[in-house]
Length: 303
Length: 312
Image 1 (tube, each protein chain N blue to C red):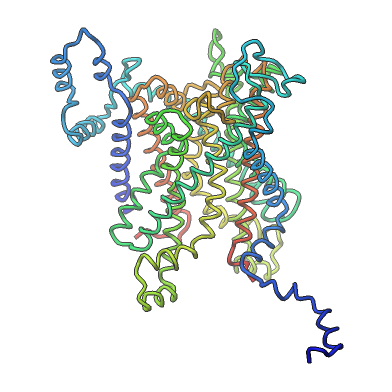
Image 2 (cartoon, chains in turn orange, blue; image 1 turned 90 degrees about the vertical axis):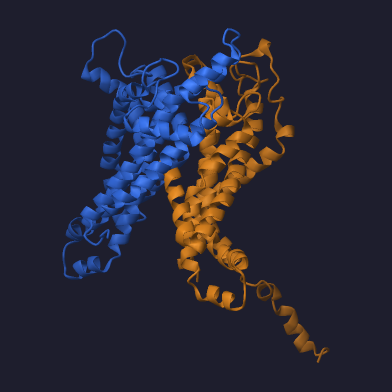
């Protein structure tokens, strides 16, 4: 049969690439994500920012913190495309280095609070009873503080630094995730497959991590994406108030701190406009991605 | 009634968290004396005993709590005046700012949300989505700086900061001029979530059976939307009124700092830099309790407006 010329001819014509590519959940989600134009634009812009972050050392024309009093407060020119600040540092270079800190703070802080949130939400939702009651009252207490008040208070305790900003956002932001995970767990633990897993002798640990958590993942992922956007804004706000990242470390919010004085605000717009615009673009991108993810992950729409 | 009782443990929790956070803050007035050579160690110990700093922490907490219940929040370390007085002074301007914002944003956002839901995928709907995204993404202090730059520095039409022009007697017009910029910035932020909420609530209602019934009875589209759907769509929006309070506080804190508005936010931010912990503790406590009251009012309003909800 192998040397039948007709069959070989047919064999050649069959396009195996279609059949070989299985339709996975991931490919469906990706396909639906791609339909949201804004989300794709957001993803591309965000990816290019990541490249800037990684290669900041090579892209930046000057080191970020070389103090040069001879050339301070220069308006944009050929040597300094975006001018220099009050200490003579090149604004463009500081923007490029600042990208790394501004964007990574958001990521680290969210990883931290998603972990705390999942832990508290999972324990609360899975075990229920008095554990649930205590943990949820505690969550209610934390939610009652407007986040900025809480963040400022913790910032006053820990003092300004990059790592403290990550810690502050991480320690105060977990409430939404905790409530989300708890809600999902309450629903999921009544499912039949949970009962089946228990029937097969799985212990609580195994049920939580291999059966319940993956199924509660979608809303957490969306919340985390939006959370990164919020975290970048919180970092910027804190640094702007002078409670976050402090010189010589550079973040976009910290660069805007100078604009608190009216003379900088009115006479040196090149100092505070670019970082402000960049924060807005970065946050906008992430919100677009989050919105696209929410639509793509919505199980009601999966066919 | 049960909701009111449920709130008690949360209030206690708030006081505990605030107390311990403040206790964790570095430094207290007696520690500062450590470096003062004129004050002998025995003297310091005597003062510590006098102020109760050597008592176990829970004793200190309960002592603080009983004073709190009498309305005594302590004294500012910086101005040496009672914290309660400071807060009472500052709560008015913040309330003015927050209240006007709340009112304006709902006035603008609800029709916007309802209309964009009834005309889904129209130009209006897309533009409201864009506004929502910008409201979510622009840092509030950045927008604040931009409007100051444009309206106060470049064109000089509006004042940059404060509540009144120095040297002239109080007039309503002067106050309004000072209010315009901070309020428009805050309102812009408050609009985004309300539009979004109103839109999704209206979209949900439009798909309900009774709306389809109304349509099939031959009632005009206008009556269907405004008589049948709108009222039900407004129910969940009522709760948003109470839930907006923490959001407004966050915005007001930053807006007050930028516009030098003499409210609670500026008091708190200033207290951080002066290490004035009693003030910080007072503002934290007051805002948290206001938020809690907001949530409670939202819940009660919800039950009042929606007969389907009954708290047992």
